[in-house]
Every structure is written in C-alpha cells, then in structure tokens.
Length: 386
Ligand code: ADP
Image (cartoon, rainbow, N blue to C red; front, side, top):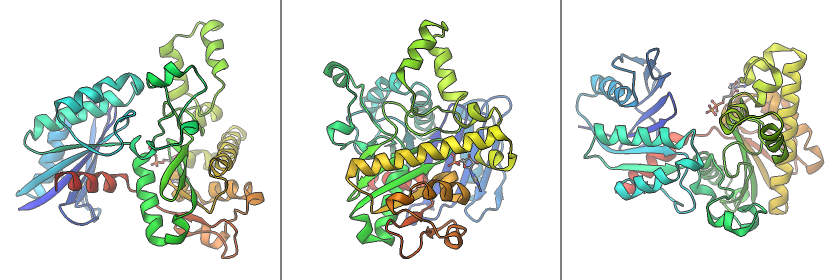
C-alpha cells in the first residue's frame, strides 16, 4: 500500500498537483493540467523528473482530477490517499489555521467568494471535485490569508468608517503558505536571525512582501485583495483609488472592465507592452522592457523599506518566488537601492541563487530561500488528520 497525501491548487483554468508520501518531504510526483477545456494539456512527472503517462477528459476540473489520479495509479496501483490538502486563497477573518472541510466550512468559504471572485470560486471547484472523487478522504483547506491573521490593528485596517472593517473590508494579506514555509526554513538555517525582524520578498508572477517579527506576520503589501502593493506580472500593485473613480466617472468603465485592467493588463505587461514574464523582459533590452523592470525594482525597494519601518528595523531580507529565487540581476538592483539601510549582495554569492547572498560584513544579511507551498499544504493535511 502506497499511503500518500495529495495537494491541489485549483485556478480558473489550471490544476497544480503534488503527491507526497505519508511521511517525508520529497514529493513522489507533481503535475499540472493547464488550460482546462478543449485545449487542455496535462503533464505528470515523478519526483525524480521522469515523465509519467497521463491522459483523460480534461474539459472540467473533475475530469482533470480523474486524469491526474489515473496517471498516479498507473505508477502506484496500490495508492491509498490519507488526505487531500487544498490551497484556498481566502480564509477571511476567521480561519487562522488549516481546516478540515465539511459542509459548514464549505458554506463559510463560499461566503468569502465575493472577496476574491477571481480565485476563491475556482479553489472551491477544486475542493468539490476532490470530494466527488474521494468522498471518504479528509479534505483540508489551507489558506493564503491565515499566516497574516494576527497583524496589529493599524496594519490590518483601512482609514474608512469602522463599519466597513466590521463588514470585512480589511487588509488580509496573501502568499501566506509561502511565508510560512520560508520563515520556517529560515528558523532552521539562521535561528538567531529568525527571532528578529525579517522582510520576505515573494517575487513571482504574483508578488508581495511580508514583515515577519519573531516568526509572526506583522504587515504585508497585499491587502484586501491580491492586487495591492508591488507591481506584478499583470497586476498593477499600489494605485491611487482616485484613478479608479476617474476610470468609472470619466471613462465610463464598469467593474468588470476595471477588474480586467487591474488584474490582467497592468503590471509588467502593461508597462512593457510586451510580456508579463520577467525572463522575456530581461532578454528584450527594449526601452519599455527596461522601464517595466525599473518600476518593478523601485516599488520593491520602497516597499521593503516600508515593511522594515513597520517593525522599526530589518535584521534580514529574504527573496523567494520565481523572480526572487532566479533573477540575480533583479535582486542586485533592489539591494543596491537599499544600501543606505545596510543591505548588500556579494556578486559571487548572489550568482549561486541560494542561501546567504550578502557579504559577511553586511549589516543586513540577504538570503535566497526557494519556497515550497505544496509542502506546507501536505504537512498541514497530514497534521490535520493525525
Ligand atoms: P507564480 O506567481 O505564477 O507562481 P513564479 O513564482 O513561478 O510565478 O514566478 C514566475 C516569474 O519568475 C516569471 O516572471 C518568470 O519570468 C520569473 N523567472 C523565473 N526564472 C527566472 C530567471 N531565471 N530569471 C528571471 N526571471 C525568472
């Protein structure tokens, strides 16, 4: 019997999966079903990287889930799932920890859909498909917001009349699974520094920062939605709310058009007119691509200082996410602009893309720690059913 934990990350048209053993951190297999629908593609790989055969009806999340499971069962015919862990973008004000999904929890999560209309419904589709596929296996919801649930009130609120806060209009923060993993790893590799004030920069297609003091999230650049803060692949990041009013009043844009603009057409893509992908922009050398990179780095630099200010200082800076882990040039640009705070990178160490990338003498050490959200979900799912 191969006892295992399945992790699922269901997006609007994709399903990311990983299969972990009942004990141990190395995945048995990982997979992706992309563009769920008539043109879907499925890729399944062993933990070693070897491809696994996979096919099936990929026109729905449920079909995709069966195709994934069939692929895994082809390799492990005696597969026994002990739990399924789900990435859920929004846990609202109430979920500060993973939760075993039952009807009441599903109802609660459904009610949060208006807060994250582009993500939450798809996450819940994934949970429902998993319940339909494995009705007897515990389903565990793991929230991107949970890590941030104990922010000081000043970092949790907007300066609106109190009733809006009471209705749930608050700064929730996201990428919490990534921050939980990275701060846990940091406590392992640099326990003394991890007791202090740490800024983690999760820079991927989605990007945010988190101020973490003694392992606890104190502030984040993302707020009510995953739009705020840093410029991202296609999201605008920080914007004056007056711009939204202008777009509505003077340009006659409705909520759907503004949502599309802010979530899908802005950020690196909007600035460059070329691509949302940092690698493409770095290779492009066009002035617009360079402008987009300069804006991205400038916002990172300003917001890192803001996160440090929220804690009264910064004892370490950590990069993670696709850009944070791989783009040494971007890290160098950001850190050079933070030299006045005592941040520095050592070029040779920075080229390694791993571990401590600052000189020994740097006042604020800088680290690269590859994130692993799937492992956080797998551990939470195991813990919840033990
Ligand atoms: P997501 O938020 O979708 O999980 P990732 O964390 O995978 O995104 O990050 C994707 C981003 O990382 C893309 O902009 C990609 O270009 C960038 N990236 C990945 N590898 C490199 C690299 N070697 N150099 C520069 N950017 C990179």
